Image (cartoon, rainbow, N blue to C red; front, side):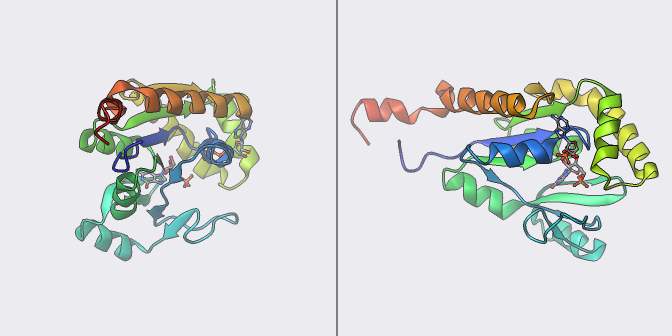
Length: 204
Ligand code: ADP
Ligand code: 5GP
């Protein structure tokens, strides 16, 4: 493989409570993939760790990141800012690593227009009642916050046609397999393997 081959950019979206975090944690156990860590102004949850799940910022700090053009994309979600620090993504892709952004729909659309070859995946359970029961089971939001997230999910589902793949998260292991299949198909695309021509001809 050519040393200067760039990594691929993947985006995973889906309603809050769909299982994105859970599935990514499983996927990363066996898939060489770098997960971008977002900045956010939302309050940390019990399981959150600064610099591991998010970089937690004040609104002022976040707005300074916007002004300084430090974000690849950003959006407001449930009253808070969320955004992807730009430099990390650029560095990892240039280093040939595949990168996954776990972001909501407005951010995903910004990524697709900046990087058309980015692969957009939408994860969802089959029904909104299953979504609600997962959010209630997670126990990290108040009833009012859950209602807001469900309402937001109804809006987000309208955007699925902008995505390249839809994955139903029913059984976690099967979902991970589906994601691995998507990733390996994308890696195998001819457009992502132009270096093979040179290699075949012995020029690298
Ligand atoms: P998200 O990151 O999309 O907001 P989480 O990964 O936090 O969602 O998952 C929300 C809740 O649903 C968690 O309590 C998680 O354990 C549970 N969950 C995730 N995937 C599944 C699944 N396939 N079946 C049942 N419960 C799931
Ligand atoms: P949560 O508060 O549950 O961690 O995340 C709420 C929503 O924000 C989720 O849909 C998650 O995918 C999205 N999100 C997390 N990080 C980013 C980001 O950097 N940019 C955007 N646009 N959305 C994000």
